[in-house]
Length: 141
Image (tube, rainbow, N blue to C red; front, side, top):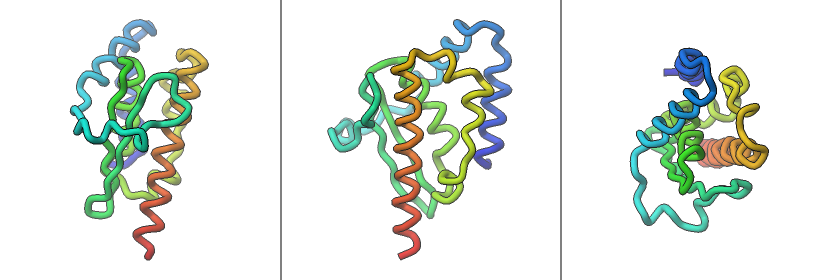
């Protein structure tokens, strides 16, 4: 499924909830559904800089697609990274690099996060796109 289709799916999913407390609950459920990562991946080099909570992000290239795995020590943050993984995982590096992130505004995520969590969200996206740039360079060599 394309990044745009996955984003559309998330927009529809979040539009089912009228109230932001319900959307937070959904975000928490998404975080709980995130597969556990190998404890060995919870290393300093996998930590995303700029997040108030600890977020570990791992990326691997499998059949020219990037597969992301992650974990966080905070439940809301874990939900946020779960949403990003749903959109970006199993996609080509080039698609991730050029992906428009407008769905975040459409579901109202950024405006309903504390400033530190909103900064963390930006840091997560930045790190995922950096992985994509690195893998794309690797594929060209």
